[in-house]
Length: 278
Image (cartoon, rainbow, N blue to C red):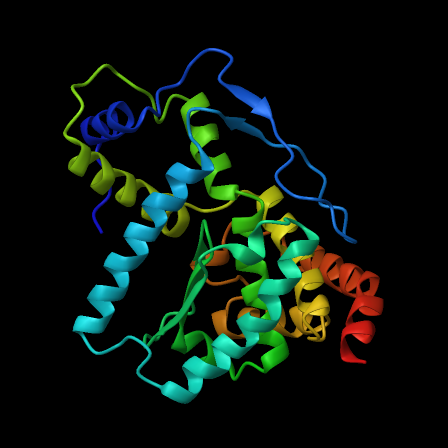
C-alpha cells in the first residue's frame, strides 16, 4: 500500500475527525497490569477512537489477504497454517488477564508464504504471520508463541493508537482544514492509515518493552515456555549476521538489555506456565 502524502493526510484527518484539539489527550489505562505489571498510562487522543482503528485495520487486513490470495501465497501450507492457528487458540483466551474484552475480538490468523522475517497483529486481533519467520529460524512452538504474544501485546496496549496520538501532538498528523472526501473515501483512507501505523511505523522502546513483558506472560498462560523468548531473540540476532536485529525490530531495546529483561520476566511468570501445564 502506498504511503499517505502530506496533503492526503489532511484529507484523511478531516474525513475521519482526527484533527488535533487542545487538551484532546488524556491518560488512559488500556489494560490491566497482569503479573508483569504493565501499568503505564499512555496519553491517547480522544479524537482517535479504538473503534476507528479497528475498522480501518479490518479493511486493510482484508485487502492484504486478497492480494496474497491472488498470488497464491495465502495459507499455502495447510499444516503450517494450522500449527500457527493452534498456538493462537491457546494464547487468545490468555488475553483476558489484560483486557476482559479481548478474547471476544474478531480474531483472524493467517500465514503468508514469504521470506521476510515478519509478522504483525492489527488492532482487533488481525494477525499475519510470514512463513519465512518460522522456516528460516526453525522456530519451536514455544518460540512462535513468544513472538506472537509480543505482537498481540501491541494490540492489547493500543500502541498503534498511541503512535497516532503522538504524531498528532508533534504536528505530523493534523487537520489543516482540507475538504473532506466522501464517506467511501474516508473509509479507504482510514484503512491506509491503519496499515501505515501498524506495519510501516516503528514502535518506541517503551512499547517494545511492554510487548516483550506481556508477551512472555501470554505465552506462559497459554502453556508455552516463556523462556523461549530469549532463545527466539538469540536466533533473530544470529540471522541478522551483524549483531543487530532485523529492520522491523530496529527500535527494540539494546540486545543485552533486552535479553536480561526477557529472562527476568520469563522467570517471574514461570508459576503461570507450570500451572497451565498441569
